[in-house]
Length: 532
Image (cartoon, rainbow, N blue to C red; front, side, top):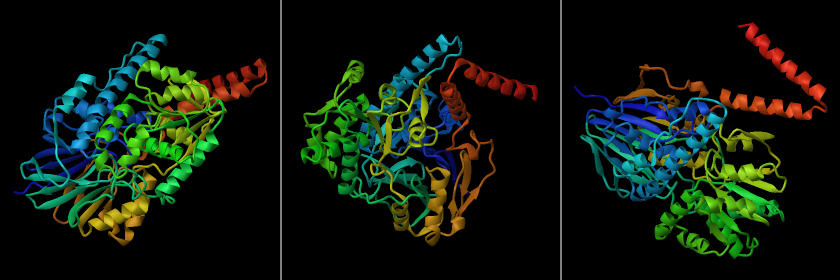
């Protein structure tokens, strides 16, 4: 009797992080990506919880690309006992070789800082890092690199090959071919836009049975994204930010986004469109990743521009902690590119703590900001924020450019899907917040019948039949209710409440009126407790 394949979505289902899709076949079980969750604390806490499947049942992993929201929980998988192969492109392996150890270092450092703060608050609970540097190194030993276009055996009766996805150095869409029952699946991974600085347009096969497609910008029609327009917008933002005693902070993903910014900034300065401004790349990961990009420069469409930028005399890499701390003492206008791109961890938080409360500073957001992240909160206009337990008034200018995104917009995604047709059965829309997925579904209305456009929820399973996907009743409830994925949670509400209380107290003119506010708050709390 033929065993029908089963597909379960354990991440990037109704949200944009934690990409992880489990495919069960007669020959075994494979994970497509194993990424880390970002965003609200409710979702980030999933990184610490057990996997929603038995790690011992996983026989192989196929990784689309190196970004942490796709690869970041691989060391946890290994820590929990996984020892099978991890298939990826060669460039993805090289980038993971610097990104996964860096992720482990950040977790160990941040957990140490959190435990220290908790001890000061007399809290006895201690937090363990999700994984360590040793776990990351053990993970790297399991990689099996393959080139684009080369078929490889994943499981008995299941083979795969990589197609260039145009999103990141080494990024891939994954074509999967099942022998029994005969079936072809395509996992898009993340699809790059038409005007990606360093990569050709994304590719892929046509005539497949099932398509798992990202939808990050499914509801977005991006404005003119040509290189000239992109650099023109960047130039305008830099000139507007220039202040004799100020700084332009650019939170950036350390891998590729930082290298694109280096290329464009240095080109603008070389062409005298901007004066020669000191540029500090405040990220050991970005420095290490840049060396990987330099080694692959000949494979990149604008590799020569990147190499020229890296040779610029005004470009400085701050790798050590001492070099990073010294940036707080830099005088005169300068630019700092620092990870992470959503302001969730890393050195950008230290730069924000030093500059966010100053009028002479500008923060330029150049990538997608997931709901619940500090970057999204700043982008949405918060007057004050909390960083590592401290409150900061936002007086810096907060600006955004969407033209550095590594993701295709809605029309580009629809065009990519159209080139994959005919589609025998169904398309699963993943890796997008609810509005983006709905927008993407609307775009596909003229290409694919509505009942063949599926929007899986977190931990939801489907049986892949010869006539279409069948949604299965859940064996267990999802780890996060569907309506709460990709949304602000109560942690965000508490933070906003504390900031509002602080703002209200600061607005009162004397101690008497402040005491009135405090008494009202206490009465409200007592009234709620009395009604329980």
